[in-house]
Length: 175
Length: 214
Image (cartoon, rainbow over all chains, first blue to last red; front, top):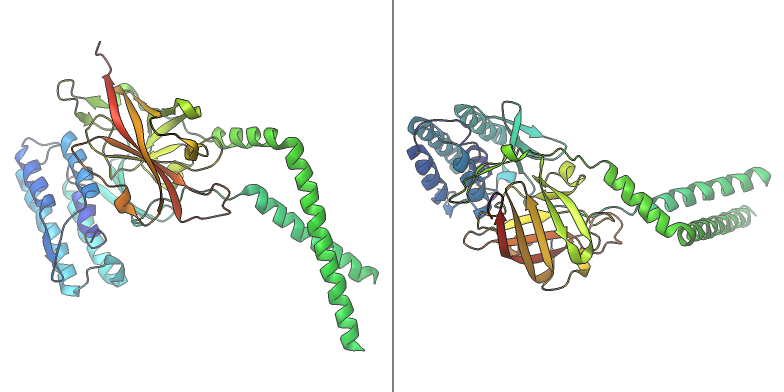
C-alpha cells in the first residue's frame, strides 16, 4: 500500500516549503493527505509515517490556497496514471511510467520552490529547497541495514587465500 | 599414470591449502589474544574519527514555548541531539535522517517519525559495531534513555525489547498520541555481512525539560 502511494508521497512531502499567507492551504493539503484514494480498484491511503512528514513540513511553512489546489491537481494526475496502468505496486511499473510519475512529482515540488532528485548511492528521492536538504524518501520500505561486516574475518580470509596461493605456487615451481 | 600424477598434485595442493589456513588462523589468533583490547579501542577510535559533528545551533531548531511544538526543524543530515544510555555508557550524536551515509556518523532519526517532545513515535537506529550500539542487546527493562536536544532534555524508560525481522515494519509503528522512543540495530553482532534480524528497544517518555524553563 505504501509503495503504491510513493508517487504521491514525493509530492506531498514537498508541500510546505513556500512561505505564504494562508493557513487554509495547509488544512486543505492535510485533509487531502489523510484521505484514502481509489487506485486500481482498492482504497489506498498514506501511512502514518508519510503523514508525519507532511505534518512536519506544514508545521513550519504555509501554503497558499492556489498552491494547494495546484499540488492536489498534480496528485490527482499521478493517481490517474496509476489507475491507467491498473497497478497497485509502483515497483511493477515500466521505466517510462515511473519517469512520468516522477516528472509530475517534480512539477508539484516546483510549485513550492522545491527540487527533487534521485540519489543513486542511498537509493532515495531527495528534496532540496535552495541548497538546503529538506528530506529524503527511501525507496526501500524496510528497516535499515545496521550491521557491519567483520573486518577481521575478511582480512583473515584474504590473507589465508593469498598465503595458500603462494604455497601452492611455490610447490609447483619446486616440484 | 597421468591419473596418479593428477591425484598426487591435488593431494599436495589440498595439504598446502589446509596448512596455509591453519597458519593464518594461528597467526591472527595470537594477535587477537595479545592485542584484542587494543584492537577494539583502535577500531572504535577509527570508527569515531569520521563522525561529522556538524551541529545545528539552537537558533536553527525553534520550538513554540507555549505549545512546545517545533516550528523550525533541523536540516536533514545534521546533528541535532545526543543519545545517552547511562547503564551502557553510551553517548552518541543523533542526526536527522536515516540514509546509509548518515548512519556512518552516529544515530539516525527516521524522517517518517516525530521529534522528541512532539508527542508521537520516534524511530532511531544505529550500527551494531563497537563505539555505536554493539552493547544495546544488554539493555535492561527500566533502563533510562536520555535525548538531549538544543530545545530540551527528554528522558525515556525502557519497557520492552524484541528481536524482529527487517521486514516487520509494523513492529516500529509511527503513531500520534503517545511519545514512544524506538531504537534498533542489527542483531547477531558477530554476523559477517548482512543480517535480517533487528534488536529493537521500546521506551516511554518519563520526563521533559524544555530549555529556558526553571
